[in-house]
Amino acid sequence: MIEAKKKFYFRDKRLFEVGDYVETCNHCTGIVVRIDRDEIGVFIVVRLDIIPGEFAYDPSDLEKLQVINSPK
Image (tube, rainbow, N blue to C red; front, side):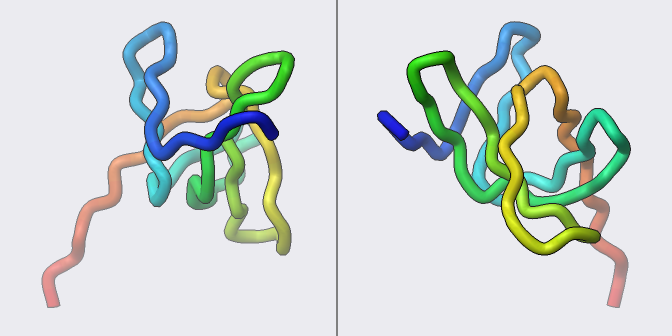
């Protein structure tokens, strides 16, 4: 890891931030825990809901989901 960020703008103007709820290319959902950069480029680290551990994804493999708060 060379650098960690809290926000990342991708080519199509999607903005990923730590704490965002996302869906992966294989339809798993999870939370963005960090955004890192290495020699190859930027990657998004996600903690999935169904599998323990953290997994790195290319930003183009993620879609930001909108979370709607339910009334209490």
